[in-house]
Length: 346
Ligand code: ATP
Image (cartoon, rainbow, N blue to C red; front, side, top):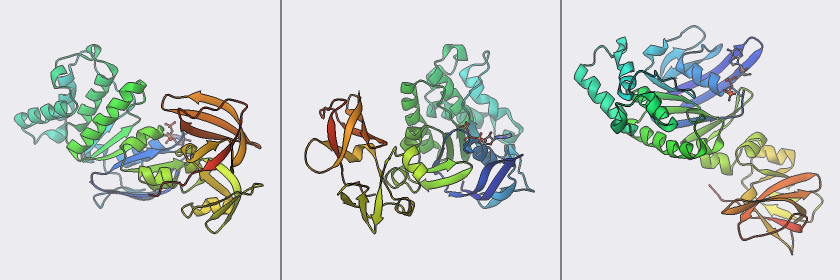
């Protein structure tokens, strides 16, 4: 199912939680909404779901108006599945009974008992729960419980799956393996997924496109690679790409570093950086050298990370972050020079 969010605004008293949001989501697309706490992610998701009525603007599903300031198609008529951060399971019900539960609603009346059984079997299979179907929640791990929440959300074959930080309660390792399972579920069901997270690596790993929000507004919409390699705003450059912002002056596609006889050519930097006299450079795009030309700096911190080393480098009043390979060893206090490597073209 396609979704169209047109000029949607939501005001809670004095708070403008959504400020003229426009985005078109294609059928079967996986969209992540990413941004810091309070930027409006959940409000946008809940407005799409029909739990919140927009103050102005329109939401269409497959071209049909389902929410505007006057219209509100009830949630149960929207063919949605939902997975939230906290997954309440009933202690006395088995895995299978949990997944069967949504199929008892009036909306599923027209489906035969045999067909319902098949749908439950399929949801259990998609989430890898077939072998655990007779277990009670107390006999499941955190990841398995979250998979029950996923199975419950997909059993009715929803056209749209809304997920609000579904992995945030899980530990780091489980998060990574559940990402793959959510991707598999996306492939198997073909549902359009709208996925809220404040974890950029989660959004980058799974989504076809990412919506970056700040203060109720969209800062950028793009594929993970577009967002990472070509941040359109200062906020996106630091929030997602973790860019260092080097000060200087742009002259066409040439950047002159402030107070240094160093110039770089780069034709792919967004206009806002030209206007502000900044060159956004990601930590892995800086090479450290001890001799030759480069922006001079002093190593102030070193963190060994297995495959790479993360350095903090002081240059004037700025502190830059630089990632090098694990065999490039420098020590705190050491004077080095920073050389910007050519960035990868999309
Ligand atoms: P988080 O990552 O912390 O969950 P979020 O990006 O999902 O944050 P929202 O929950 O959408 O942010 O909130 C956006 C803004 O709207 C915040 O300033 C919040 O305080 C405000 N807000 C959300 N719901 C309500 C409400 N029911 N009444 C009043 N203000 C609200």
